[in-house]
Length: 130
Image (cartoon, rainbow, N blue to C red):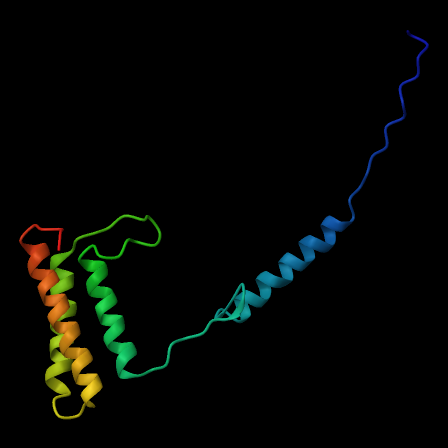
């Protein structure tokens, strides 16, 4: 057995890793230069209009009332003072735009205010159900 020769081991150098590392480095440099671009290219932003503004505020209210989980932790949080602040902001928007909205915008705002106010009252009273 001592006379048996072990097969000669070859050391394989993977040259491809250099190309992969260089490509990753280049991708990171491009991300730093163009932060608005993500993995799939430039991100698409919603149009800057009244509907988007109201929807954004409603989303913040729902998040504050535990209706939407935190995307990082998956947990739901209840922050009544923050929810009230966002509802007050939506109410101020309603007051400041009286007479300047289309019928569709007015209906959307009225419906949004009604829904978030009712949810706020329900959550403030300790209820989670509908």
